[in-house]
Figure 1 (cartoon, rainbow, N blue to C red):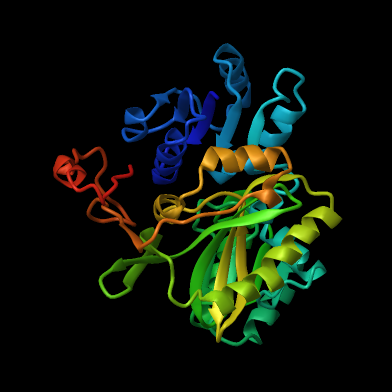
Figure 2 (figure 1 turned 180 degrees about the vertical axis):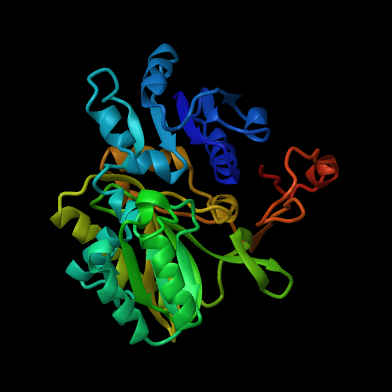
Length: 370
């Protein structure tokens, strides 16, 4: 089959690398792609959010499947665009519907969803400019630390953990009054800080059945010994020792199964990934957030560990035979380390030449994702 993969990060490089291994993969196009994906498939200069240009490209290149990497096209309704178009609705689109993508696109929506379906998560309240003073009182009376979350997409920067009431009140004002994240922080979710160890669990689902394809732990701090500023992720490992059989059974029973049942009850169409951002709190799982796509850098360890053919998974997901599929993993542990420019995650130099990659490529146990 001919595939169009949308995105340009390490996640998309890993997805391209995995899909290209499948005997079902004929031509693989990546829009816009990067230097790494160029060695696997064909990079095309199309914005992941430019649905009309994608349509023209899909028709001209006889595309059979569209795989969406980043979150923005999902929240913007890419699934609905393809399925509501008579010329495109025969394509397999690995994505949730626009309404279902609100699980990631709106913190408020996801918290209400969890509440409706008794899925364990942190206690919370939500505020807008209309009840701003009420929000300040809530923060003043809240235990510390306290977590403030912009309701909408904020490029991964919309969650702030505040150690003091003063910082929380200042952050609250910057988000709502000063519109720190634009329309994304018109509404702010204020929630309790959960103690424990974070992890991510990834499933493929058709909204009725699901298969776990892996779990991972990422490390976000820039400095040695888990110190310094938060980043998008400096490294990642899988499998995780503390995600044992007993814990993962709780994850399925208390979180994954009720989530899938909730999708069905609310008629939310879903064909794709769910990334459960979880907290292991004394052996009990709580949902920190839902994402409707794979994570980065987690994808770079989850997919190399996954033995099962990814395109087969997407096909059975689409054909409603996902329940009959067995997931297999490669033996061993997998880790990824990010190479970043000095100064990151603040001001840093860009467009610097990367040297020495050929030395790494000689090691068959090492993959380089851009």
